[in-house]
Image (cartoon, rainbow, N blue to C red; front, side):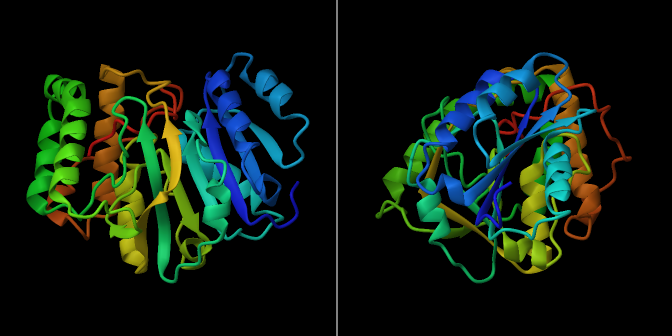
Length: 309
């Protein structure tokens, strides 16, 4: 185990060992890689993922593979690994929680990150370039949603076919939105800026986040991680910063697939309902849904990029 690493990277695998191997291959090429520690969580894949990943990581002393006996979901797997790590290690300056279908496209990523020192920042959102749209997935939500917008989210999630259409249409909408923003912005907007919610595909938590009482909220199996992170930072009085200079590549939807299934729809709805219940002081009139937690064996934890925006 790396002795007091500056950065901890946690990724979660479920029957996608090839993705995880590509992720690891890109991570090991990072400048400063020896200064970080990598935790790979296998969420009870029940295939040859564990042996495949162990073979790829066996020669790397700063990489650990944790094989879970159940599929705890994306944040569930990440939280379990982090708690195990913290049993005998202090919290590093940076804790990254990300999908396994991420590729570090910039070898200087860690160098840029380790040079940062922001006061009052809880989470950093890098530029997460989507393979589907070729644009940055961040900010996931630029400004805190109004109650009207939250009702709109709930309306979308009230009907499977409506949400199916929205997800089918979303790449075109994202590309159009990005182009319009580029045309109407005088500067490139290339510097760090405050946002409401980061993409759940790649989250960089600062040590300040955990020191202030923050934690990886795994109350829902999948989806709406953006809301949970954003509202927790808000309650802690910490900022969420989007820094485009930090750049990664995101394949996206490797486990759940591109088009919406009824199972994924149920997880989207459950994740959103949980976020509203958990942070009901922010949107009290919307938090009316009954508690629901999806069974741990239903779905994989890797694709968070298609959650409600």
